[in-house]
Amino acid sequence: MAALAVCLMGPACWLASPAPRAPAAAQGSGIAANPAPSPEQIHSLITRAIENQHRNDRELQEFERAERMVTRKTENGDVLADLTERVVPSGTGTIKLKTIENGMPVSAEQYREELEFAVNALGLTQHPDGRYTEEQAKFERRTREHAELVDASTHAFRVTFAGRETRPDYTGHAPRTLLKLLLEPDPDFKPTTRFSVSFAHVRARLWVDEEQAQFARLEGDIVTDIPFAGGIAGKVYHGGRVVMEQAEAAPGIWLPTLYDYEIEGRKFLFAFAVHERTEITRYRRVGPPLQALEIMRNELNTLSAATPAR
Image (cartoon, rainbow, N blue to C red; front, side, top):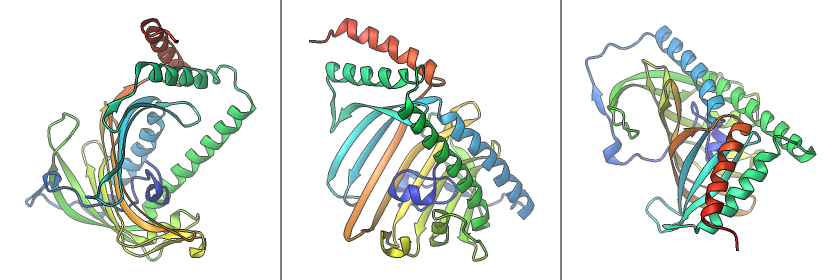
């Protein structure tokens, strides 16, 4: 999970972010008779969930997945792009292989070329050059900043118990009963980074699996404009909404399954509006880059034997 500011311009962090309306079918059923946890119990749950989130974020770097991203100008507007990609961790970020575009699978030859590129890119882990080392340092810095932002989000909000809800699980598991919390900006929070400033502009709703101490769903609303560089570089306008979900992808490991956001804003002098929904499926552990390299190399050899290059 990434940070709120990153989430507004792309996928983002778990504990702090804004969210579009969930469709009616996704609404959970409330459970009225359960006793409310004490503030100390809520604090303990969130502390354990934050620790698990850090572990989830580290584990994500060893899982490949499929991401389908559908982009529209507005939530119900015409589709501008519909792209499905295979996403493979690389040690410096991810490598994306296009598999389906606008409903049409890519050709076997094109996919073989993409596999060749992935194998060559992953091969740099065996013999890293200066550029790879530089990209690895940047990735490690972004990872640290993300972890720090997740920690900061625990201090940025006042948390209120809002009940428990049974919600459907789209990964094949039985419906889960989740603790629901309301997150309001804490006026006493002092931002220490340019990204954590965004927390003051967001109200959110958070669903937590109490048994596993895992964040399951986050919704929120941008309630005031979020300026960048004092508004000179642009701003995200209030009224934007974002939904993020994650689910158990392996025993004890919860990874993202949905990013869905609709925002409007201005970047320098240019206005923008976008609705983007990304569904993430088919998680598979491929291990660290050298192990992923062997998997991809074997796939390339198999595919090349079936579809030799012209």
